Image 1 (cartoon, one colour):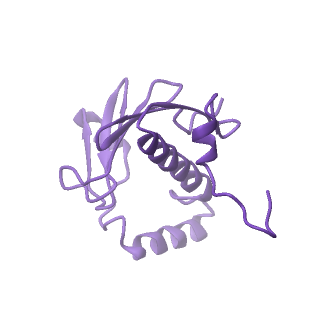
Image 2 (cartoon, rainbow, N blue to C red):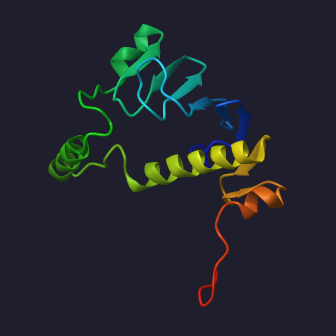
Length: 152
């Protein structure tokens, strides 16, 4: 099982709570919270939590976790952040923090949360098959209908 994609999405007003198979909880809000900017998210696990958004600010608890994360000084929406990260990875031959796999899983989670919100109910997602479990309506919302001459 792929542990990088949440498997259960539960809309709760303007918030969607997503739960991963390993017990991690992801809280997504459609508005900024605590100065985090827009698109704020909160990850909660057995050993603590971290809250961030596109402002680049981060809050976490307990404070002992501070030593375990890399601090960014620019807003997440500042394009120079991505350029510096790219150049750092060219020099080190490392993988960027926002690589293609991370970006894909982030977008899958966001779209699944949006689908749950549009349906007004909880949905289960299979991260291996990348489909919703026994939910034809949610699966239809994963893409738009093709128009001629294009087809799946």
